[in-house]
Length: 198
Image (cartoon, rainbow, N blue to C red; front, top):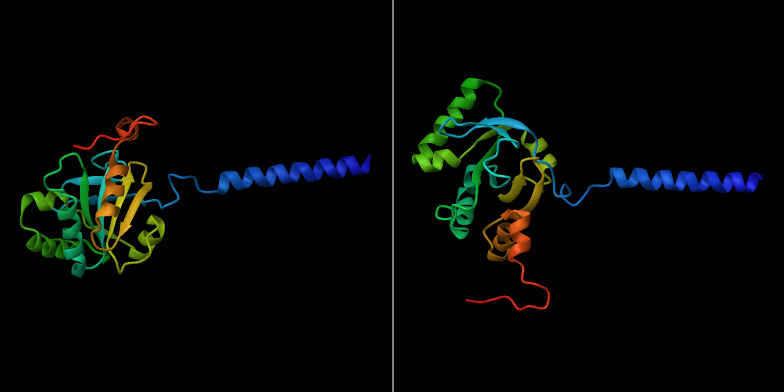
């Protein structure tokens, strides 16, 4: 009797441990990171609650940490042809340590306004004043030395990420992730069919 009870208890503990691990383990959609929630404004003063207020269900965020990284982000914008491709919702997102006062934040915004004089640029540039290191950890990034092109949804989940200078293969993967799930499945050829090449 004691052996049966001990065996049942061991089995129950094993099942409980497996269930606990299944609940605690990250799922596929959140494994890359989670953008923290915050309120920000684009340089043209459009207020936005991130991630719920993002312009599309899947948005490309071009994240920088230093002004010297502008050329790399410009490379992503040109490489993905973002100015001409209206199908991609995107934002330029410089992540800055919060200086702690409204006046200091306004001074930084004024400097950015001088660097980005065009209205179209200002509408897509959203400075994020926060704890930079905490943002990096939460979003699943490796640090502040590189730029990131990140696909995020309105739940803040990081669905895809590319690091560093523009790369055509990485850009193709980002484009694929930016498509809604139904479009991705519809664009795949049926099993056994060869894809059309025009």
